[in-house]
Image 1 (spheres, chains in turn brown, green):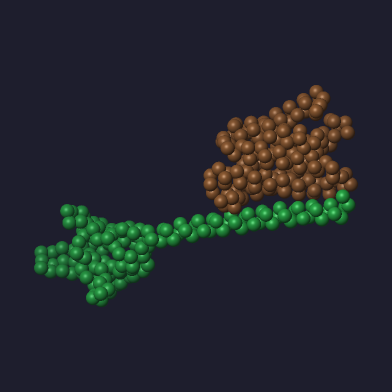
Image 2 (cartoon, one colour):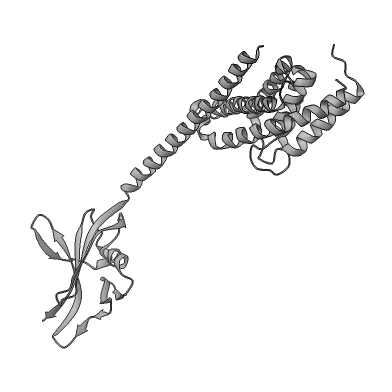
Length: 173
Length: 154
């Protein structure tokens, strides 16, 4: 059984509120912080917690997003975010503090890769729901994917380390 | 995981992202290209190209070759495409052009000068006088027409 301190539960609540605040605000398409926060939570608290966190955010986002109701694509968005959380949980095993620059570069590459996987999953969902070829959905969504991948590469590269430092102080590790 | 192996893993991951993104972009532009090409080919059937001769009757002849018009356009539409300076009268028989580019019809008792239109009959290889008003004759693709300022008498 997973047990969490009140302090940690408060942290999750604040982070969920933060993610939802960003997700539900008018913003450039596909520019979001949920992936970064979900991944970082995975690094600190494990893939299960992070996966649940990401899925919860995407569940609410699916109904209230300013870009419209996600509809049946919501499960695919949740699955994509769960993968990002689990990836964070896996990455915690291999994390190293040898070089901050190297660490940032790794985080940026992981951010790009995971975002691309997320887009592949959601585009596949869209293709299945609308009965169009998957590769066509992927190609059609490419400009938005590039924005998504680029923004998350920057966020992971520049914000993962400071966010990790804050969380490290918070959890006292 | 050793540093070397770790480097290899992340470089491979970066190359994978790059190759997937590049493939996606190539696919995106290919689908855009095929869509635009298809739309262009469809629009081609809606466009006709005709040659128009303007004969001012004083030796001045000006060709407006490969003038692009929407399919279904009339001889009068073609005239309005190449010049805005057109005056005309309408009647039950159709449009009667009274002036083009400042050159006006002249009518006296039994003679005069007027703008008349012709089409090129490819089978007979000769100009044929327009059988109806200019606004009632629908142009064929690759048609050739002439607006001539010429004298008449009766």
